[in-house]
Amino acid sequence: MALKATIHRVQLQVADMDRHYYADHALTVAQHPSETDERMMVRLLAFALNADEALAFGRGVSTEDEPDLWRRDLTGEIEQWIQLGQPDEKSIRRACGRAGEVVLYTYSGHGAALWWDSLAGKLGTLDNLTVIAIAPETVQSLAGMAAKGMNLSATLQDDTVWLADGEQAVEVTLEVLKAATRQA
Image (cartoon, rainbow, N blue to C red; front, side, top):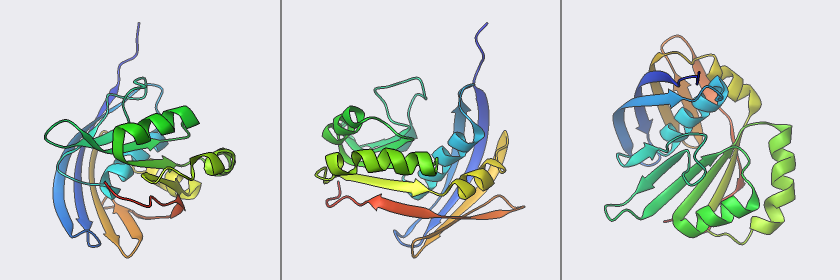
């Protein structure tokens, strides 16, 4: 018998003072049985960092042709492709060819650093690629907030990010490993 996804209902309030974006999002997040709380919370964090009315979750961890999150324009063109983890070079190049902007979030600490060291030279010419590392301590703190029903608020200002759930607040530590040189 196949295991079913766990459904999380999330009320996410975003106050992004850097982009002047302020909105409430009612999200339904399906957590695949093989997906950890850490990864699911990084998906929610990625949503908050890139929040937009058109931003949507992909079909899940078992779907290779879709990102974890993406934003499409009205014609169906992919404006933004957001991926988590440590995809291979071929997948990253394919994403950069399909989307105006690609953002990768890594979150496994030393393993992510080794992954990036092996690819940085090969991917340095992709001008629509941004790679961001999230500190493992941050990911652990975020995982502690995971619940079937969540009320989260994300505050972004001057490269500082706070994610709070009413009981605790986590300052999110991000390290830009590669910044895109052009935007979508």
